Image 1 (cartoon, rainbow, N blue to C red):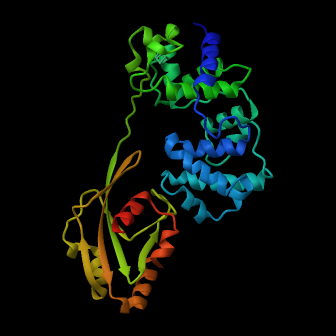
Image 2 (cartoon, rainbow, N blue to C red; image 1 turned 30 degrees about the horizontal axis):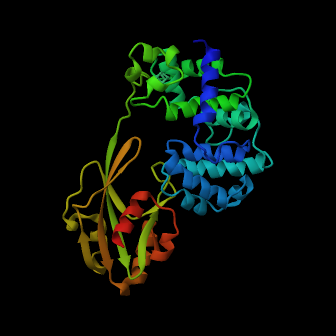
Image 3 (cartoon, protein in one colour; image 1 turned 90 degrees about the vertical axis):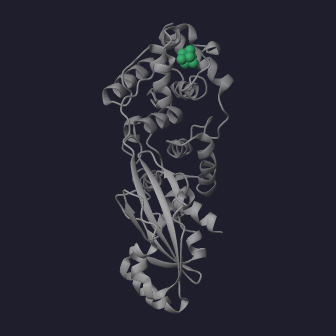
Length: 357
Ligand code: SF4
C-alpha cells in the first residue's frame, strides 16, 4: 500500500469513527491551543471538564491573560504538571502584549510561544490555519512505527527526527489539519497500545507489524524513566479555625501551590512524633497530636512517587499571636480553613483534607 492509500484510508475512517469533542470542528486557535495544553499527558475524560471550565471562565485569550494567577492555578488544580498552567497563563499574556491578542498564524512563530513545543505548534498551525506540518505524538509514533515497520527507539532524539521526517513526507497538501486529527484519533481508538483489533483495521493489508506478527513489539521505546521515591512528612497545624500553610517555591513539583509545613526524606519517617522537627519547635503551644503513621498517601508523578504522612497538631488558641510570629519567621502563612479552600493546592493535599471532613 502506498502513502496515498494510507492517507486516503485514514481520511475515510476518521469521520465515521471520531469522537465528538468540543475542540474539533473549529478553526479558533485559542480553543485549539487551550485544548492541546490541557490534554498533554492527560486522558480526554479527565481533561474535558477542565477544558470546559477554562473556556467558560475565559472565553478568549484576553480574559485568560487578565485573570489573577491564583485563580488560574485554582482552576487547574488536580490536573498535575503545574508548570503547564503557569506557561498557559504566561503565553496568554504574551499573546495579548506582543501579538495584539492574535495567535501567530504559522508553525515557526507559534513555536516561539511559552509552553508551545513542536507538537502543539503543529497542531495549532494545521488545525487552525491548515498549514502542512505534521503532528507527531505518541499515537502517531505508534501508527507509523507499526504500519511502516520502523524499529527506531521513539524515546531517542534520532528516532523522533526519523518519525517527524516520515510524517512530514506523508501529510497531504489538502486538509492537512483533518489528516493530523485522523492519524492521532486512529492511534487513540484503533491502533491502541495493547491488543489492537487488527482484523477489523482498514490498514491491515499494508501494515508491516500485522503482516509480520510484530504488533506487540512496535513501537520500540528503550529509555526507561528513573523513578525516584520521596517521603513527605506533613504537619497539619491547627489553631482554632486557622491552619498553617506554605506556598511552594521554585525548582520543585507543585510550584506556586499551597501545602503544609513538611520535612522530606528518601526513607519512611519514624513514627514517633517526638522526633519531628516542627513538634519540637511548637512544643509550648501543643494541646494534642494525632500521628496516623500507618495511613500513607501515595501520589504518582511521571518520574517520582510521593509517599506522604500527616501528623495533626492542635494548638492552644491563646497563643495565636506567638504562632503568627513563628509562622512569619518561617515563611509560612496562618489562614482560615475557608480561605485555604479557595487556594490552589496539590491533589494529594485535597485528598487528605477530604478524608479529614
Ligand atoms: S493492522 Fe493493527 S497494527 Fe496495523 S495499523 Fe491496523 S491496528 Fe495498527
